[in-house]
Image (tube, rainbow, N blue to C red; front, top):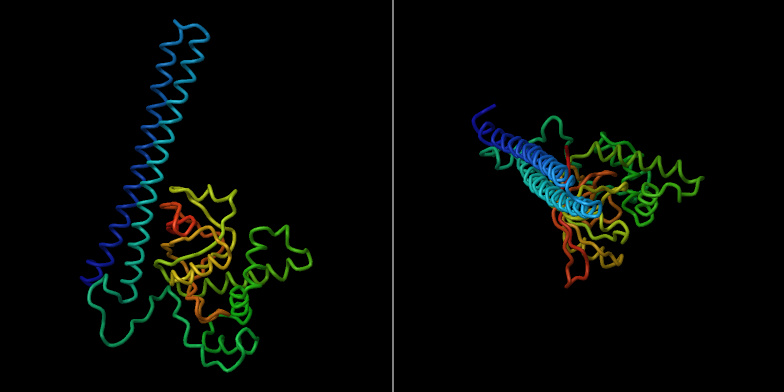
Length: 312
């Protein structure tokens, strides 16, 4: 490791570790305060109740219970806000660290001989595919893709492509969210496509950074996406590097939510997509998010969410 790595990646990693330690310490301290409050309330109740009537005792216990509950909610909110803020900064630092590993500015001056190779543990990017003469989405096209990028199989290429079609996203995400609603005769084939897409995404390079998503979240689930909460979706999670694309999609689907994502494990599937102009970054099913803010946007009449991916 040279001096630039120690000064760049080493400093970033130290900052990440420091933030994580701070979050854990804050969580432990908040827990200790919470236990102290509960202990003090118990002592007050035990000291006060012997001289009170049953009615007065009941009223006191009820009041102390409300005080304890209010204090606990305040502490929980504080804990969530601290953890959420730390997660946001950690994700930003992880992005810088990944940039540093791939020859970006975080670790010092990059080599000038040409684009740097990806680190050994990171898959190479997809090569250009636009000149493949076969019709996109066909087996012939997928075979040509695999010739240029042999990390993938034909089934994986076709599964990712199928997901990006209108029918594919509804079919695959619908099955992931509600498999009981999928016709029994179709379940095995759909699950096979899902497994192939998941496998294929794991073989492609991750693209950390900020992306956008326009979507509809059912009204009974929307309260779960509150500031400080950790949430996930059983389905694949599509997003775009272009906010306008995400907003157009939201409007076309009567969506009630616009999400700004700070992600770490999304994959650029544009070259394999049915729609080649959506700048799509796709996340695996079940990816977990920390909601940083959740605010109603009166002008656009939708919820505006900021989320950061939870990676540990």
